[in-house]
Length: 555
Image 1 (cartoon, rainbow, N blue to C red):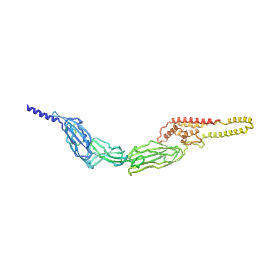
Image 2 (image 1 turned 180 degrees about the vertical axis):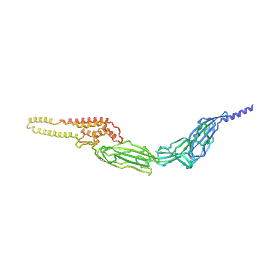
Image 3 (image 1 turned 90 degrees about the vertical axis):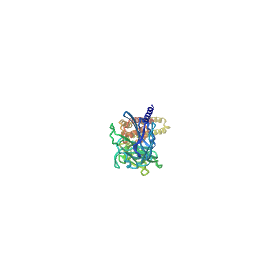
Image 4 (image 1 turned 30 degrees about the horizontal axis):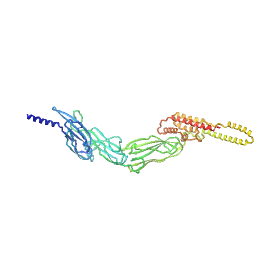
């Protein structure tokens, strides 16, 4: 009886010991190279929860990648066994000796691991790796918003099954990839590597001391093994992560002496073209001035506005700016092209002021200016554009009226003198004669009326041009129409004078819109309906005003 009890107790203790899981932790390589990944594997001979392993204690000394979990169940001689395996990818940030701590899984602890991390000084050390990253920057001491190019080269000496490369990071900076990936082959210490190269443009937006964090490669590579593929025919892979070196960067503030929009660049230039390519032009004909701004190391968003000033007598109509970006020698080249349509309203000699854009030369570290010098153009008369005859037809009624006014004044003056001369002597005879003279004078004095024939002709010409939606003909017909309204004592010859005489805000806006559509490099559709309604309203208003003025002059 006692023997049976002892035997049962021993079997119970053995069974309890078997119930406690055995947990181990190992690394796939030791020592490791800084920036190179290695795998920490934790194995428990029990079916455990996937969240039983906590990798957060590793964050203090390592970069912790993804953790994969697998479970396996096997049965041998009717005996079932379970295995749970965690694999975590780790990267050591710098060289040194580290301790991977013990992990507690359901009361069972792993043994701590002493890990040695060695420096990777040159390519000879790197070539022993299957995968490694090299980075290089164009400068480590720059100004705020100055472009820095980061060259990233990924060396691959193993067969990949899955791969991804993250972006570099820098606090308070804009980072974009310029160009496309370039794939080449290099031999490093007798070993062949496939090389993928990327170039990034980095524009720091704040001054200070920063660190550019290199991209990180993550993927899976085939394991080098002499065993045959597993039962399902799949090759065995292992996760790999590689991190490039961190790069310190000093960013200087904008110099206090610099005035204007801050433009740090290696090269900034202005160029202009004229169409037609001549310095003599005609009134009313559009002149296209194209200004191109080219900058190295600046993005499209950093390019400044381009504007020009013109003297009185010229009007300018700018087009929408065109932006272009290209990559040359791993540098970002940006261009802004803007067209200006210039129209002269009168003949003469005009001087356009110079165009100046200040910038900071990052090569010479000094202030510079991109300049387009003053330009002088000569504008000649254009008989085809504005109808301005030497003796305008619509001035004839005004001259005739002037003469008739003089005759009336002389008759009235003579009549008044005769009245006073014969008042005392021949009162009765003089009264009768005076009455007769006044009657004759009324019959002879014509009623001063406005001649509407010229106005109607010029007005109808303008209306027909609007109805045909012919913008060029409309611009030609406005000056004769305004002259026919007799708003001024002298005839006008330019469109600007017509606008000033009419003094109507809506009319001015529609004419400017018409000129913008007609003179811009890319012609836009123009609808004449609104301008036609404004012209009809103005023609009626101005003619009504003239008629009231004439009625007051009639005796």
